[in-house]
Length: 385
Image 1 (cartoon, rainbow, N blue to C red):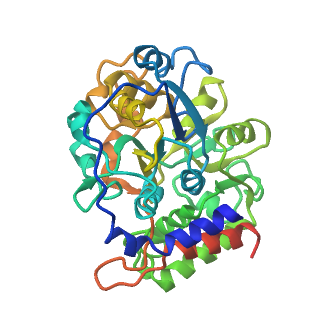
Image 2 (tube, rainbow, N blue to C red; image 1 turned 90 degrees about the vertical axis):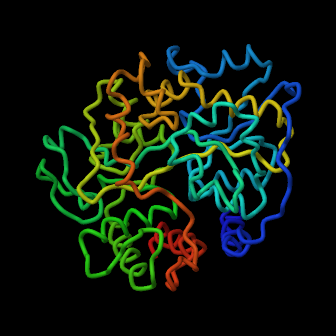
């Protein structure tokens, strides 16, 4: 609970802090590596071949640079922010609903892209994305992007479900059984945006244009939908490996998920597939960010450059089910295949509502519900209130 309270307190100051960031200077040169780099990352993002020998983008880096890679996995953006607040890490692969909080909280420092030669190879749409480029300064290096898919059991759904309603509303599924106790939802306040995205299509009278910019009426409707969903959900997932086990052994029929879980389950010949329903999807564009008090900044810069290599980007996209931030990685990668980027959603960029931290001052004279309320209200929903 202490970590949650820290997030609430921090999010209260996001809007104000973004307009008054301290003008600390970015590193101007890369020296000798310190022998290690400590990274907070999503599961599956930093692989050294322990799960599958074909997927290893750590061993070669360690041999070349002498920087040992240590990884702490985190299942939610709030967990990542809490870990960075505690300190002891050099880098974090932050999504947009964490990156602005980290910048506002001065937990990350400006990155000198001149020290990262491969930065120029990044998709231009991401080089100055609003969730990591603030007040003309770069606060990170794009890593991967993708969307939150609807994963489903193909024995339950012979045909792919067309709408997210199968996880939001009680109903009988194609196998004739109720979905009650057979669906999951994401264990994070940002999931409120998934409810809002569904309502944007199913209840157009609400006038939702942006699932992260909700007025009181729109927000109330999203909470009501989620309270109803609470009666259906067997588990709120944040651990990818636990969700994989749930699809395998616990009879889960459908859930929001990532390509990572779907790909691993497919590799085990599980009865699973995924789809982006007609309403579209929320998504993530993750950024490797440098801690303000990083103990191993030289190794961290070396890793950020390494992270943009076409080989790593393509291998990671194949493993995680994501899209490289370096478009060149989509060609000639044996693991990803000729059409891998397209399969993972490369052409869907404009249909994705990318995660970002909700703020009260949401532009256009509109007052929106800020993130600290998303946090407290979602905790209440998880508790059945």
